Amino acid sequence: MDCGTSLVKYILFIFNTIVSVIGILGIVYGVLILKSIGTIEVNGQVGFPPQALMPIVLISLGSIVVFISFLGCCGAIRESVCMTMSYAVFLLILLILQLTLVVLLFSNKDKFDKTMGDVIDNAWKSDTAQEGGVFDAIQKSLHCCGASSSLDYIAKGQALPSSCCEGTCLNPLNVYGGCRGKFVDLMSAGTDNTKYVGIGLIAVELIGFIFACCLANNVRNYKRRNAY
Image 1 (cartoon, rainbow, N blue to C red):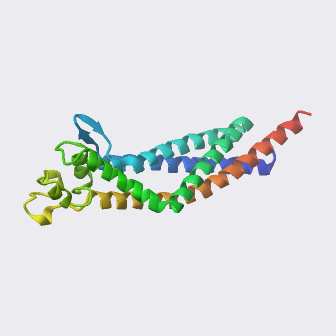
Image 2: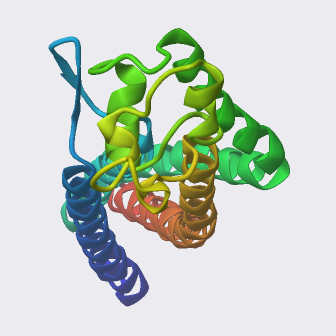
């Protein structure tokens, strides 16, 4: 094995080791966020609130990155053409999916914000102010009140539930703001971070893809020359 191929091999191994660590840190960060958000209970059923979408996506993406990086490490250290090319293909698929997601997030921000707002509106319409219901659980999780504001309850002729206020609801200063605006702002900030992290990952994955293709090609040529 020539010096250049050996160099590419160890660069790819070190590169994927670093990416694996980043993926693990992403998983840990997502778990910590998910833990801070907590779960909600609706009619005896325990689940995650809508704002848990981002950390769940982060955990899923981190798991995929760790798996692909592990494949790359094994392929590089074993000088396996099959494993290295499999790694390159998986990396290319992940790269294309991330690029598509980033483009969609950049070009459809208004639609995304509207969709997130519709999530709250639909939850409000389907479960208006039921104590222990879906919207009550959302209010407890987001520290908000009503779809647009606490006036939504007044318009329905209903008293504010305890989840609408910090302390007693008799003091107007204790009443939280509307859930729609708070949820849209939260998800919008999350997608902004996702876009820029995605761009960084695409650049890193492109480098890994190039190194993997170079290594697989060099190993294949080396084995072919030694076969004669």
